Image (cartoon, rainbow, N blue to C red; front, top):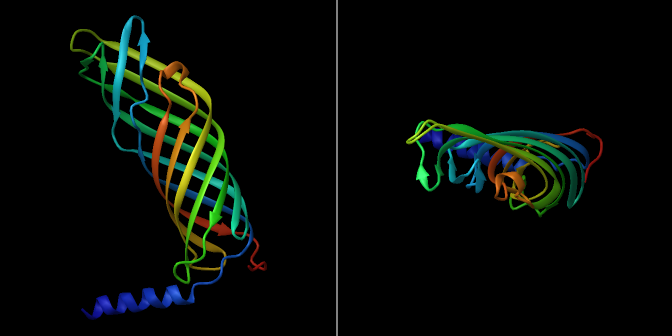
Length: 212
């Protein structure tokens, strides 16, 4: 019990003494979990492909931005990937399935940082626009015959984001957030590409002598 009290005391102390975040230029690195909905609805060589589902995937990326309270503006690069779990060909579930869906996004974002809910924790909301290159590869060995599909798009994309920033120092912060990212057109894959991301990240603020 005394260990729990000590941990809570330390956490409360760190929250109450956390510094005010610095304005100006910053950079961030992040990564986490990706969930991809079905993104295939395509007829390939006379075979109708659909109902692709994916195993939990991952993403990684970074950003460079400028903070001017309460707004933030940034450019962002993100890579994500998830391996295929199953898909249908002519409405028949395939066996011996392999493949993946991956994407690379370059986005320009705007965020709004709300007032701190605790001395060091700020909620945020934001969104962005940009371009995404997406690719899908599906292969199977049955149940009737082997088949394969590969398709890619380069499309205008958009995203929405929400989360929390923990400012544990003037020039450092941790983030926890959710992002939804999607393309506007379907093209070769036959469906809009969509991804749900749950990320953790670290922020470094360069201008240590500029304060809010």
